[in-house]
Image (cartoon, rainbow, N blue to C red; front, side):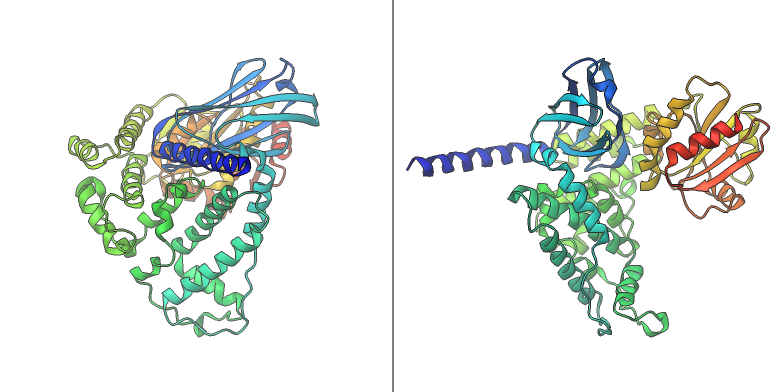
Amino acid sequence: MLKIGLVFIGSLLSLIFNCYGQSNYMSSGYVSLIIKGASPHDLKKLEVDGPFMSDPLQGDRPVKFRSVNDSTLLLSEFTFGPASVFFRMNGRYLSTILLPNETNFINLHVTDSANFDLDYHGSYKEIFDNSGLQEKLIMKMFSYKPIVKKGGAKFTSEKEFTGVKMLHLNQMKDSLLKNAPSQFLRNYYSKLIETYQITPLLKDYNKSLLTYYKMTGIDDKKEVNLPVRTRSYYDNLITSGYLDSLSLLPSGYFDLLLTIQKDTLLEFPDILKAGPVVFTKSLSKTFKYLSPDDHNLFYDMMVASAYINAINQGRQLSDQNLYDIIAYFKNKQLSSYILHRSDISMFSQKKNGEVFFLPFEKEHDDVLNTILEKYKGKAVLIDLWATWCGPCLAASPAMEKVKKRFENRDDIKFIYLTDETSDRNRFYELTKVLKGEHYYLHKNQFEAIKKKYNFEGIPSYVVFDKNGNMSQASTAPDNLEEVAKAWIEKVL
């Protein structure tokens, strides 16, 4: 009897916790993580790379731990909903989820540079304690190969294709999650896998289909008759699971929403011109099967992300837009967050001496020499990047170490170049984290620089000596930190 009572109490506490946690999923506020060393010397023995953070209305971005004192680091950011955070400590991958208006603690005890203990206090201790498992899971997810029948029949409809892909997705989840330590982690990891696997299917239907055909042995485009894609393409991909607030947890959630918004097939109107009611009606043309309620979670997050996307593009909200946002959303924390992002955007876009937004006339393609002229007599490392480029953001911790190595030198400059494909607001936010001077160029100007040095992708780097002569040009080199230090030493 006592055992039954304890089980009941445990289940009740778990239910209360889940309800509390999920209520915070739809709140806005500051998320906070504090790392506290047992002694002032502990933090000096550790190297922290990152961290990166994402939340339901912002994609992955580098953020910073601030040094409060010799034994305390603080991470604090304003978010809507749960914020996914990951970083490395002495090479060890660590991940957790932070909730608005909560403070999480990591008590740190260092034995030596190779050994340290971490005691996590927060709502998602289970995720943190299984960080290593999550890292392995992500690596296995991207290397997973589904079992396909060679020489299989071609698809007669796009819905048939998504049905097979979802079958493969479920097989992947069953394979990777069979040893998950708990049902909560199984559910969380399942959402993580689902979000990362579905987004590419939405971004490029033709590429996804041709890739599948190639796995079956059909590699001649002339042999392939691609089924026409219609709105029913979404039926198997965006399911009722996106009405559950647990769908907000994965770090790729915001990118999924943006991918849907950018699908020309769905013909979404400009939300700043049409307003949220018309935008929601447009949503219902494709997603009515999810719910008869026009204020379900998926619809609300799609509408909110449409406003955030407009703000990120540097567009200013009109008085009518502000009224529409306040009147439309039942969740006032959500509407307040959108207005907050709008205010931050207007404030951030005021130019300063280290950020140059579209400083050159569009018709002038060759702007690199003009930029270099400003730094005459100094060595220059140019970093070509974009806010949407995952490898670019992942390289930022290594580059921060390079900049720290030369922070006492006044004869080396670090210059960041991006273009109009980068979200404007996110660009301004990231310039606060990425030290150096930043140029937001027209797309043709950025492409001219890439062409000049035969760069096909980013992140790419160009190093110039003090006389303005190019010394090095490279795309995504291995061991970036050591390589970049060597580049700079050579030209100083």
